Length: 211
Image 1 (cartoon, rainbow, N blue to C red):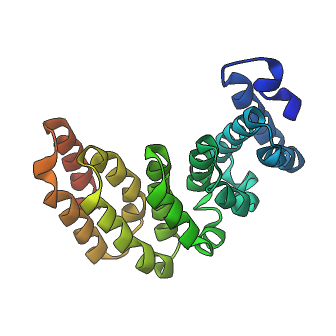
Image 2: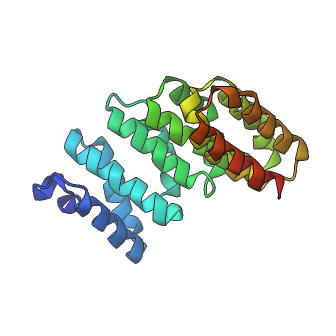
């Protein structure tokens, strides 16, 4: 499988990596996935970069196929290679609904990566946290207040996108107080938004209110 990576084919585009991900998904090839996971620690940065791409492309399509490797992705959050860091958080965002217990068991590490991460890492960590909130009430009680704090303090231009990521767990919420707190957090920062951002938030609020 490693020989099918873009870097091994002398390619500078991602198509071979995406094609490989699709191939592994169609075959539900756990052994092939294991080989790609092994490439993350190969010592070859180009191989590692392509492998993480393959893995989160698999996560987007068949999260259950990479869910067993949650611990490997969490460890990769602390790699020196930032491509691995944000790629690993992307993979975790896809598998959070499929492997919430594994992620919650290492929540402090994920939170650390979120606090220190790049823009893409932070974006995907919000999806991780929302996925964990949706998993069960125990996780929700721990994590949802952190998401509200994030909405109160993140950059204004990030609010609409992050709010939409968080809305995944709002949509599944049985807790009216959480829905109200989420809407209040968005309304509190409405004055900082552009007209387009405010309209995007208003659309999301209306959708949630109607549920």
